[in-house]
Amino acid sequence: MRKIFLEEFDMPTHWYNILADLPFQLEPPLDPETNQPMSPGKLKAIFPESLLEQEMSTERWIEIPPEVKDIYAIWRPTPLIRAVNLEEYLGTPAKIFYKYEGISPAGSHKPNTAVAQAYYNAKEGIKKLTTETGAGQWGSSLAFACQYFGIEPLVFMVKVSYEQKPYRRILMETWGGKVIPSPSPYTKVGKKILEEDPDNPGSLGIAISEAIEKALEDPDTNYSLGSVLNHVLLHQTVIGLEAKKQMAKIKHYPDVVIASAGGGSNFAGLAFPFLMDNLEGSKCTKFIAVEPASCPSLTQGEYRYDFGDTAGLTPLMKMYTLGHDFVPPSIHAGGLRYHGMSPIVSGLYKEGLINAVSVPQTAVFKAAVDFARTEGIVPAPESAHSVKAAIDEALKCKETGESKVILFNLSGHGLLDLSAYQQYLEGKLQD
Image (cartoon, rainbow, N blue to C red; front, side, top):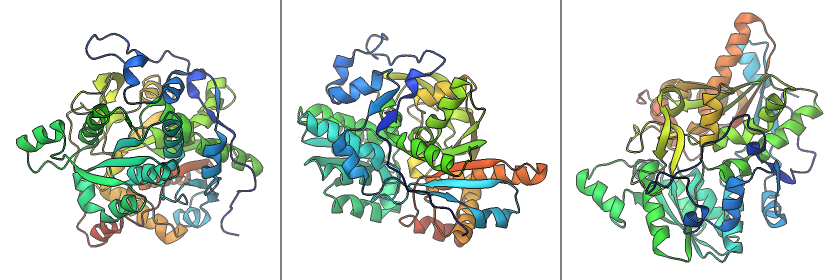
């Protein structure tokens, strides 16, 4: 067999909370009105109490509710696949494995937290959820999750992605979501931005501002975020927990763990359960967060307090940031077009516990096409960033002769991103 599928075990019963094991103190979010630590009570206007508890919890293991596991069972556990064809194509002695999250109904890793967030909001009587989405993976995942709990989703989709990726909008609408291109004329934030720049392509920071503004207007409406926050990263750890069990079955352990990084949930989901072993001192795995060269918050941002959105409606968070008013170029990896990075991931990078690289768009699509032609799966542009980094690591092994085990997160398929591939194949895609 040219590939190894490892699925014969139950999915995790608990999420892993890395806050229990951090060797440094995470800086608290600040209230922008006082510059003092934010009171959890102020956040209850947009988040359910159960998620706020998870946000601050230092318990190592948090149980996955049975109702969430029942929906997870539609696609979990996801396969771990050895990329033997890619190894042969590269001529590398490295062993390359990838965890494939593209088999979820929404085609990405995002439902892992969308289902959990919809469940906790419904449990507290919330009828509507607002959110933002870049390329549409998060928005479609939340729309998918909301239909199971009788919640109405309102999605502000970054305008450039709304225009580039119409099928993601249709997917959201199929699952009952209402989708609005951002910046929009339906919020104070959107109106102000459009007055200043009618052709503004939008950004995740702007879309977050619009979604929060709408949530604050209605007591029956909460806001849902697809990355960055602690509880979001927590829910994604089902990826790495499954991967650890799967690799143990074949008596392998990764020397290098790689995942794309926009806000941090993709990276955290795969990396944190393995990073736990590093923090305990039992392993010495290398971790690489991969970001676009056009939006390099870790590799070129400043580590400081900043808003999570453009309008300054969120708490101030200590993170690597390019500035909350930064509008990234209109790259096709819309899910990575975010100005800041998760406070947890930022802290780990600041302390030297993880590495980060940034890669240009054309090189990412070259790697994606090579992967599609060897492994058969067309990666999402966001996921292709980890493909590129994995190939680079495998080629280093070719130079040194080392037979390292490389594991990366193939976080979604690119079947709704074929217009981007068309541009690349026609030589029209630029950095």
